[in-house]
Image (tube, rainbow, N blue to C red; front, side, top):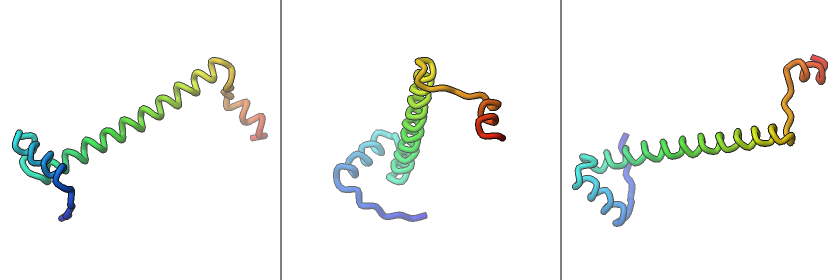
Length: 80
């Protein structure tokens, strides 16, 4: 797939610097690596948010603010 993107001088300079230092062979490789890194960061952020929510729910359960129910209790409540 071919794609044309206008990044502007500051980003062109960053790309050229990374190529000159040997971190990437060309501009396409810089973009691919950046997308892979960004995808990882998004995944890590989502995992962190889920962990925070779980920790909050566990803390609420331990403090008595949240109650858990057994499957039998749910079946009984809803006549299942």
